[in-house]
Image (cartoon, rainbow, N blue to C red; front, side, top):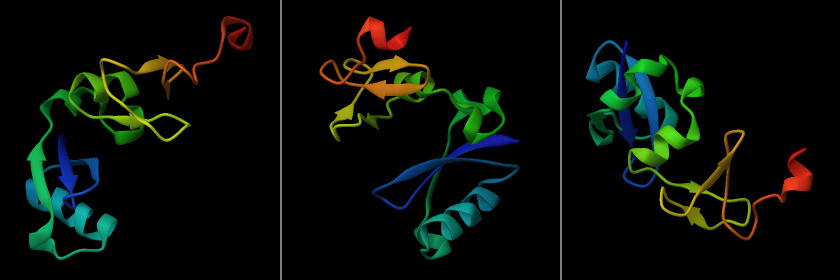
Length: 100
């Protein structure tokens, strides 16, 4: 299986499929849009994970994706603090006592 980034122009997901057409079909169902409206591109960096649920947040961040902190602010590779696959900003990160 190959990893593909599928998008509706606003949101993206990683889909694992044998072909770009299969990934596009996943995007069509996921986003509820026409087959031809789904944007598809290879995400070779994610091939090694085998399924979307196995991709760690830091891997997305290193490849240009962003995640929202619990406060709602987007966090990019430069600002994100990843603890146990949860993404935080500097303000929201748990202190050391909370992590123990």
